Image (cartoon, rainbow, N blue to C red; front, side, top):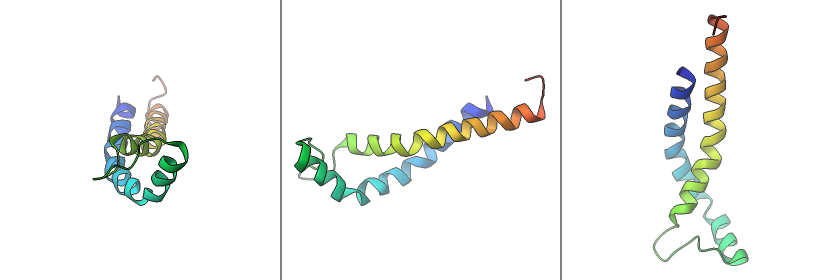
Length: 81
């Protein structure tokens, strides 16, 4: 259970970092839009999927590492688990 809580916290902490990183990756999003024809940069801002994609790429490994670390730490304390 602690591993799941750690994964959720890691995803929550990754969200503000992902938002800033998405804006810093604006040249990449423009290149993607120009080269592949995928709508990434609108007239007002970036598309929502850009934020979600960045958050998933950043948050998924963090959540998996946090989950794994807390699961191992719990197993080391309680050999029956």
